[in-house]
Length: 423
Image (cartoon, rainbow, N blue to C red):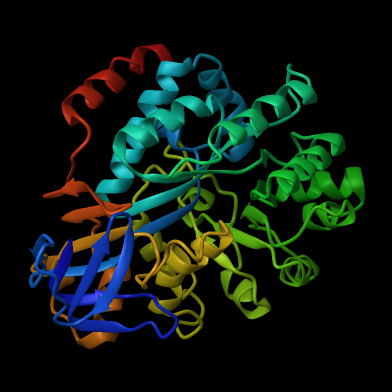
């Protein structure tokens, strides 16, 4: 397949090249060639003269089955939201609920230009089914915490999932202890041991609220970051979600240990959790990706909306501190690095996976275009996320703005049948 005459190709390569009138040759699941006037007599050709082509966005932290809980609880802080509404609703969830929520969420992500997401939840096999059915890419982890099941039982399930999906084309895996306030020291340590043994990421919520930091200081005499560091749990394989209340020492530790942060501005604001200091993290050299968190706390999985919010939020005191290119990097190459997938996704380069998003050049929210800088500005600040086509692994999974593999009407009908159960 050759995507030819692409009006604007946003590569996100090391030089951040934007190439006009470019061609991209896709062979099976990979980008084989990027250039101009590419030719091969036997390959299918797609005219993209009216398209912007960019890398698929990467959602660095979410809980996709919670799409089923969109709008279920508002106007509460995190702890009340969790204990009064979310945990009780989750206790009612069966495998089919998890599957349908995941089907709804992955469809929403694909149709708004996200081709990969980093997940922490339970009943992970059912999430994997939705990933397989919609054609999206994912890093999936069964969340573990100190609940009724023993540590051994939870980690057995978590590692069995890792083993079962080790060779999947579009599913990578991780080990995901929920947070220091829901996991014992033994569970945190054993989770890291297994993550290292299987060479997969270690995904954990960190410093999401003032209360979490206060409780950690009272119990451990340390911030959550300092506590994890004291237990030898921080390194380049760790993805820390939120990091809303970091101290300067915390930022230095994360930087020294090459830990990645998944920034979730919408969910943090909606739950009153605070605003992560993205600009200070940037100054410290911390790799920071971008995530939506779950639909129950966002309420959207649209990464274009998340990019705009992140850009505006961190310009509030000084508009020069962060640029539109910084924000696009967070949603592509930075998130890819956080998931240890920078050699596979996040940019359009030869040898990488063909995870591509196409946007109609005539979309009113993308015009006018003032050169390369204006194009990136429009993608971050004005585009609504209504993409035209999406390729994942070289396969067309969105066409004319709709997922090709699912029936919208049946999904909507099925999830609305669950409203009475959870409402």
